[in-house]
Amino acid sequence: MVEPRFLTLSDVAEVLNTSSAQVYALVRRGDLPAIKIGGRGQWRVERPQLEEFIQRMYAETRQFVDQHPFVDADADPS
Image (cartoon, rainbow, N blue to C red):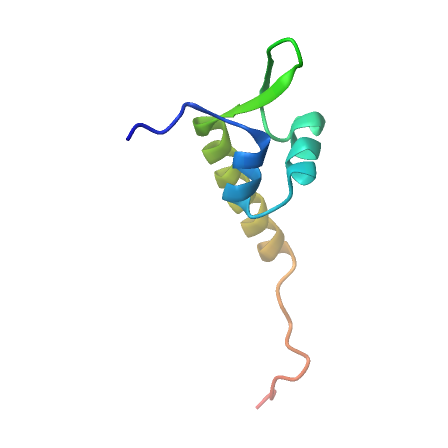
């Protein structure tokens, strides 16, 4: 079975395990590129754009972790 080229915001929410409202916010802020189609202006996200977004989030998280190392207050200093 061929996967569709474009995903609905609900499809994207399922992939990211988040809400459609959160995905809509990502699209409206321009964080996740999408297109608006049809008379009712339904949003669609192309699969490669979603994968690029995910990779970008991994890179941003890696940078955050590098800049904010975890310090375990309960660790034994010895």
